Length: 343
Image (cartoon, rainbow, N blue to C red; front, side, top):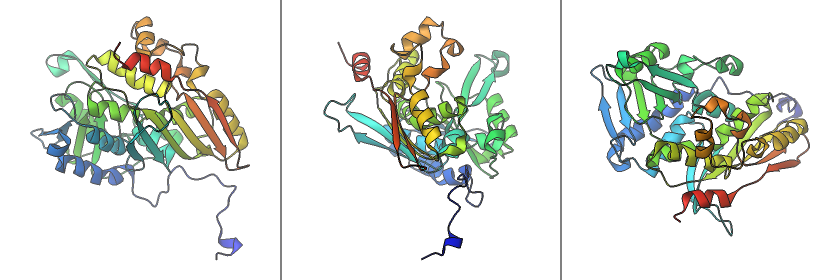
């Protein structure tokens, strides 16, 4: 039994990440290797540029799969999260299957790696044809640290290999690949780019697996100290993919906004109360309509949508200070079934 002098200081905030541990790219590297080694089983296709960069097609021309989506979601979390699919067990579940996510390093797993915060674009002149845009997510973001968020997190990864996930319906042009290599400081053959369109099976899975990340981002937007969050778990129903890109985006957003539930373990009662009260999506003026309808109503401009909408539907916030749990928000299973079921 440890003596009291050897016990950790319980009043000190937990670190966002232990610097003695491997970084997110090193932790994700075996998962990337598995995705490539099992490409045929996972129904993904591999290609390499002339310089040796690996591109994994998980839903553009390749079929992709649910299992590929689960693996990509774990890669997105920098190897710091557990992602699985399960049969929903409630008497009247919103949908038969759900994605479960949990992490003991929520700040770095979700915001330092999984968050789609790196804007990557190219003009039609640069591509020699059609302009390109995608948001990059996954561990290579922490190599490039192009976003101001990393200064707040106090985190930067340094590793010789990296992986980035692009949620887009075409493979990236060379000009974008070159930018990622330059900003990450990687050799061409040390980068893996994984492409998962939202309307694909794998793309649907990996977006719904962001239910905890969406909660962490909302914590950040609310101005609650990120080091309050010690543990995080969540789930959201897994919708069927939609062939239309807007509808597919709407379904994956609705899964979280109306069917997502999270439990955050935090340090203090004050943080738990605020999270339970202010975090759920029902606080938004735009709550109550399918996301695709909202997006169209605002002329396809994300920035006109109330930011408060981007949050899970239901939240439990448990405080280590008192051991009490606060609850807020609600699920809207009827909205989901109406949108996803055949008439």
